[in-house]
Length: 566
Image (cartoon, rainbow, N blue to C red):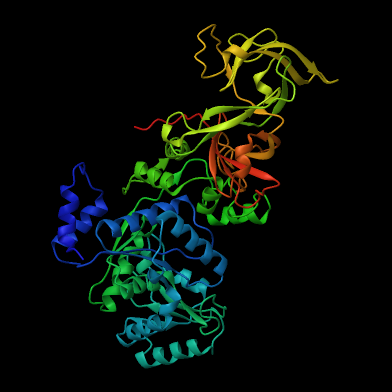
């Protein structure tokens, strides 16, 4: 193992490293001063829901720092509140972190509940030091005693209980003698502190709840602000990196590790959360969308949970790129959703084959093409990446084209098919529209064309030129599929929430195209395989609903982007 100081020097000397974020600067200084010998970071989610895009920033920041400094990265479940926690959420978080990080050392996966015995002993130690007491005030009374932002609180009448009485009461709390909520263990700090978090905060409460990990062993549970610094210290975490809402909690964090006399206490550092425009990330709002059946689960592709992004077809590489562009700072800011879309386009454009799919089909009949003949055309898999090679695409007398690619009376500068106009069929031939058929409502059902066999793509034809090129799928070999097109779950113009606090759901957030036709090569798509559908964007086979006899593709992102990197 390299010495951490050498690691820091190595990183600094690397060509192209011109600046470091403020967290790296803090770690560098700690290394130089010999505060820590090995860097240990952690990602500590509470298993009370699915992770979202904001959590990805914390995962990548913490795991990236551990990798950079050749240290350890821990995944720790902060499961101190069994009322909201489920094994389902534990499993989903494990899957998400593995996906984001590319791997996960399962020996570095921990649970706060594994330390409940040690936390209890820590509480006993504080009581013996005269730094904690059992309080009988009700929740309402405690609020009254707490004071306000401008007025100090006042001491609980139970604050001066003897050490012996507090030890006895705390042991009886553990034994289950008292009703839920009737007594709590509080720290004895300062009720006049300008920081309300330091006004004798609650450390333990009585709560008879079955825990997903410890079952019914405990009927008292530690509060997050007490448990978290202990967990960090037990695991040897050096830098406890969290978001800015915990900045006011840092004095309590430091108080806990100091009073418990940990030899090498961890250091808490706060950074700005990732805010994404016009998306819903709050767990309670996502939960409501799920429970009300507005979405089909925590992984509905309209959401920005990590599971939803994965199901929609986003890649870990695109998430990493997005986080790099977003940066790390103490200043609160918002990132545009378009930037996330830019990142997935950039990641996929050189990796994925460009296939033909017709989402809103009408028939095109080439009247002078030989009957019952299918020819196979050479088509590049990705024109920007020749290494991806070519494939054979079937072509015949009857094709499917997009409904929008034909108009009876087109506007000016419409260069696709209309009566008398000639276009190129992508990778195939020039065709000229000679006729069309409509149903009784006047909707076009079939377009008739003639083709020029001398204009075959790749033949070196240098005759007349056409302005329009349209894609197609051979009707005889086409495979039927379903395509799902997504917009943001909330209406960008009206904002995320209605006046009554409900979510302003965009009625166009999901459009299902049930009668699409795709080229036969796409019939082999496995779950999560992704492709560029020419002109339509990037699509991925849905991991839940796509089957061999009923293919379902989710649009990851459209082709066009309004975002430009700075």
